[in-house]
Image 1 (tube, rainbow, N blue to C red):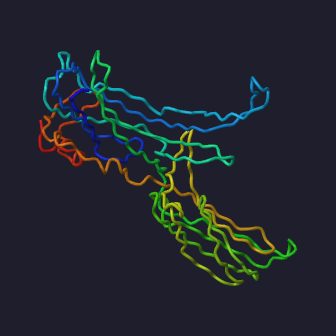
Image 2 (spheres, one colour):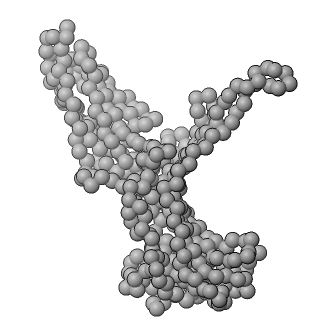
Image 3 (cartoon, rainbow, N blue to C red):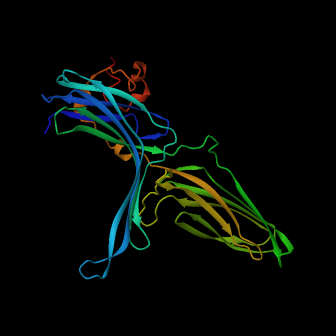
Length: 342
């Protein structure tokens, strides 16, 4: 086992497509292994796996038997490999820090991971994952010296306003399909369009019942969450604020975030529906985006003590960081950088 050490740290744990990742690779060479350079790898992929059943004939008994198999689907959003620095004569013993940057692609689907069971009990799981990997080039060695960090990518929002908007629907109540008895107007809006999983959303519902018909109840749906609420009588105005918890009620587990990949899609909307006697129901749909909670693995990372003894090494090429940025807030969360300019 190699006695050399490697670590990697990015400036934050959560990004959007198109953002720049800033970070540092830390390397402690304390052995005589033939290390020739440092590589950076960036990976983004979505994959799912699910069980399926098929009936086939047993060769011995000739009787039908059910077999459970597994299928996979995977798509790479990107696979980039960049050489950070090379040492043709080998990396000298010592501790080194190599700052880097990399620009994520635009329009990446959000990070996602979940699993469950189909209606027949067959299992499935799906995830969209992004990683940054630092690896030491060691020719002739069967052992890989590397460190990786998972980053969270959130869905990019459209360039339109992300402020809440009111969705309106109107229906005329008619007896015998022809005699008008007044209108019912439904306005609904969320307090914002984007939430973090685990938050509580507030749904505002404004019902103006200008008909002679009582509204007994209406229904609010959020994915698997349903709440039935009391209605209002004829010629009455009802205005309510309804809390919607963005987590599983039984387990307190946060809902998975929104993602719009080619293999995995996860979208959310809130439906409000009013049942009206002698008229078709009134319904509105409010789209809502869920973002991942803060990247816990990034927050929990404890830097090994030796990274504070690393000497900063200036690199060249596409990953190089301009010197003036090393003293900026971009590197505040990266240990051992700002205290040791070139």
